[in-house]
Image 1: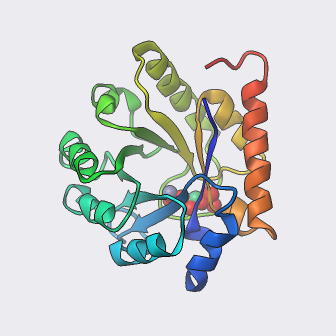
Image 2 (image 1 turned 90 degrees about the vertical axis):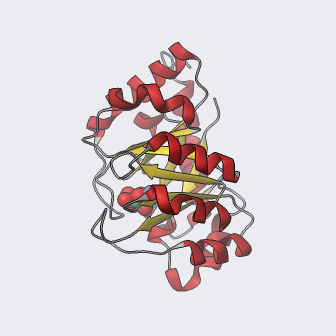
Image 3 (image 1 turned 90 degrees about the horizontal axis):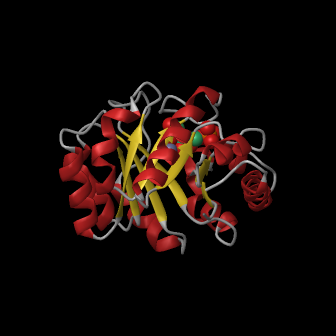
Length: 227
Ligand code: DX5
Ligand code: ZN
């Protein structure tokens, strides 16, 4: 299982997004783009036109995390804007299967995001419709929040489910992931790591990505961590 790093531009300088993307382009696997509508979460960021502009400005594949109401209606717009992955929240969608299928039919990977209080067991039967499960490790809405270690059993349970069923989803963690917390995420079974403030508040964002990857890879090499 490979480790993938997805720096979140939520903590970047929004006036210099192309430069901020370029700063991690050689070391990151994805650029994580947080879309917030001030309804599903109490914060407002950007929409499909900015995603299209970023797509034109960076070779990194865009990982759009939709924290919006009615993703059923809007998800495909983000694929058309150039997102290679579109993740939406289970709590916001009317029909998660239909929305996943619309994302995939439009040509992107589909992700299902769960807020901390949302029960994973309620979604086991729909996971085969998805390419990635996002286990939120903070309440969605803001960067720089405290990591919720209490989400690690949810990650581990998801990893066990995938192992038992042979499903090929990636497991992403998002929120409070930094040099102190990434190892426990990897040990629990995550393989895609979003980091906002740990990357863009660092003096050298690229070096921060490299260091995070090293820690995740090292955690996977620990005895007792099997995949
Ligand atoms: C929060 C966003 C995250 C955010 C993470 O709702 O989904 O992607 O950028 O920021 P950090 O890594 O600072 O917790
Ligand atoms: Zn996010």
